Image (tube, rainbow, N blue to C red; front, side, top):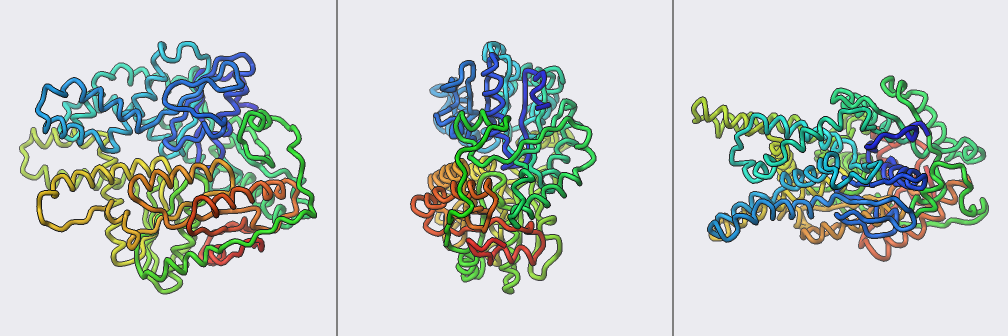
Length: 590
């Protein structure tokens, strides 16, 4: 593997959700540790599943991995980091200032901005604090999906620049109190990230057009930020031998080869590795050790062995959604499970039935227009673009709050609006507008991968608590965005997953998180199921057999309503194929 040759101290694995970053980073950590290196594996994904891969609990303290000498792991838990951060800020003033003032500070530090800063604080410490990581020869970062990883890598520079010029206006007073102390650490982090001798970025993609386009955009953005040591890994490539005698496997192989032959120009110059698709789930040490080898898989399922499946169709769920006439439909789940495609398919089907629909996304890496490939009567499409929303929010604040300020006051306000916290506020406001719109029409929302969506819900919860605090003593009727999300008559949350161990477990954890926030998921969708298709390829049949247990777990343990969408021969792009996806039947393929 090219990316494993002379590895530097820091390796970052990044890419679109669901491309296999966690599997590759875990396998790399095992590979290096078993060759005598001291390795620390760090997850910066708020929805980390590193612990699931190794079959042990990994928390926010450095934990040895059982069975691999020299390998430790750490999850940067945003919520735990935020609580430690809050106590560091609030602790010294508790008992000194009046309780009401302390409560106000705590509320100010309860939002998503503080959560992001706290996680970022831990991230930069791993890059710079030799007392924490001096014993390790390699630190491997399993990152959140692309858009949020780029933000994480931008943050050291963003906060360093902000601290250089800022006096700290009220909106960031709490976070800045902690950040000011970290100025030297952030500067050192910027230098470490930009040093090609220290840092290598491994861009991970699937052999799919959308994933390759995404990773090409990532390459450009990272290069512009000064990250020159980039490597490409194309993961999960179907071996050509599997295409023989199986029409579905042949169609998938041809689709993959077409994507690889049309690889974007910017990626052609990168050192590149190809990792074949495996017949087994990459969970446990034995599986990880086989990822970079040609070792044989576990016993294959006979070509003649039946794999029967008769499960609910997605069309049945859409019938129930359409009966409401309007409302918010939110698709949530792990990156790479197909939320964008399913959101587009549901929106197209509702519009085809003559219902007004607004299809939107809060995922920076989503490509709704590419999936739709055309306009459709009754359907409007938008994207919550963080940069555009931040610019709009800044302009609005300057025109309202800044209208009566003098020159000095307006200058301070402009300075405060340059804070990275501003983006969180702007995105939340756009999210809230979409929720309100669902009172008159269908709003189908394709959300960002699990972790970032939960942070957005944190912001929604913080706003809700603040409104309750302010309005609780009045008789005025009010409704917050969180109250609308908690109302099953107004919001239907669809959890999207794949019939694999890790995605199902992560979906179950997401469901638990939502329930703690008072949001009850309405249904699950098991997407691109091999078991629900007709396959003859030995590798695909083995994967299909392993899916059955996961599908039954969803049906019997997790979901009141669910549907299974089969793996299809043709990529579901364009209104016609998206509607065909809705009406596809398990065990028929397509």
